[in-house]
Image 1 (cartoon, rainbow, N blue to C red):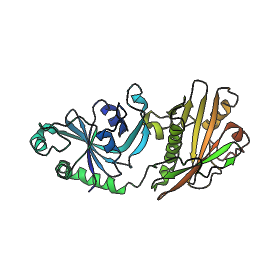
Image 2: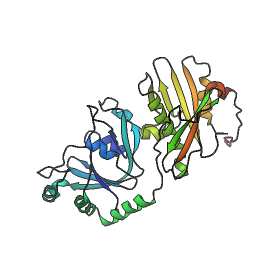
Image 3: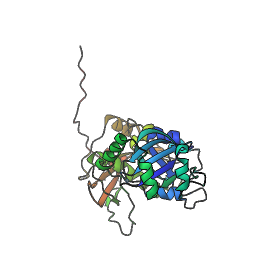
Image 4: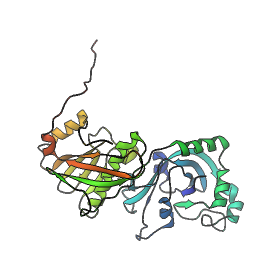
Length: 323
């Protein structure tokens, strides 16, 4: 049986329901550990989550991937929460179960989740104990329970858990003005998720590299910004400071680093920035991305000078028939 969690979504419930995710900072406002945020780090693919708002279970979901590090969503920009956080993507199924209907049992089996009156304590995410797991599991209609079990066992996609290897230990080599950085990946088994993994790898690399700097790293693609993302922008990430802007597009493959494809829009953005004094375009070329098990992935940074020397070969043509 998968682990069961209960999430209390108050001020964040509207955004998280709309985008089918859980997000919390890793640390509390005093930069200390919070049990609800620590519990986020325990969520794994296939775990079941009950979503509570206003003392009612409004939905139940399955975690699509293991929990992974993710920046605070743009919609939370005015919030005082730390930017560095945990994210869980989940498929939600609507429910409508008032906790008040079960208050007597909840009061008798409160544990760390419910108070002496059977009401949910103030915390973001709770992990249910065995008694609570058995009780909550049987609140789910049988047909929905079957769907949850199927979802929890058939999803094979994993989100990478990446770390930057120290420069003194890494296999960094110079290719012109470009560098290769080594990263660890965790159990990626889905080819369709390779592009997303590459973008997340680059985003995490930038967040770590510019953690205390003057740069702001802005997610643009839907892989990073969810439904607020723009996949037609011609780039995936913006790296901004008061002095300059770098437009970053990520190209990822499981094989070698050459060649790769660019869209017409990406090429147009590249050309438009060639002579801009305070703006530049970079391609982060992620390659040797593993499809299964623990392995390494690398990426090279191609700047405008390198791309200026590249050969662009037309492969496809858009054909419009006239009447």
